[in-house]
Image (cartoon, rainbow, N blue to C red):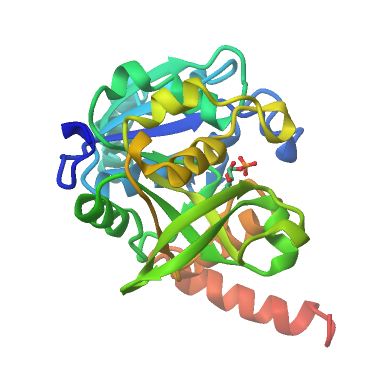
Length: 307
Ligand code: G1P
């Protein structure tokens, strides 16, 4: 085992693939990246970056593609806007505008051909180097009050190798996810993963544990990814590379899973996106009280019984 994958190698980098086309949100995403769609008043991607920063990862690499300029602009300074807010004396908004440009050290690389999640991660190789690193998928939003990534980093530091985030889902939903074969590993929320399959048919699913979009990966995954053939959907799948690791830990250490039991929103799905907005708006100190009052009366008056 190389020093890079030994338990305890420091983790400082996060990779965020953001080159997807966002077809589920057309026409909103025709000219706007899906990552920029607002959840209440912040773009979805900002929650994801805040999550990485909260877990101690302030070096962020975004894998982008065409049409992704607004992402770069959002996390950069906007002097004109800042000046206008300063002139108005609107300090609260000025702080918010500046906060997104000071969040983290953000770098960008373009994926070119979108050849799948595994290929997107491979684009991070040069930036990541020899350290274990996190991957956060922008469509999955974890409630900021339910820490997951910090726990995954702990587990990686303890066991080395790679760690995937898992969630129990209804079997009818498994075809939407990567799915794992796993065995308990002492801790209530940690499992040892012995096999992974991308978007299985119900009959082929080894468990009801689905991979949700957080990973902490051993850098030797790059070598495996380079040798991974296109899989499901003709794309290079990260799940397939992890399967190779699970089958032969000498390639890059073991694979563990952390079972998440907190609140997660799939902001790539329209209904779940709306749920995330309603939930977070209800809980906001500034908007919540009025919004909850309105929501209560809306449900009572305008939703017919039983619908
Ligand atoms: C990707 C992964 C899949 C994982 C999912 C989580 O799929 O390939 O294994 O379960 O993210 O959101 P996608 O949703 O990009 O098709």
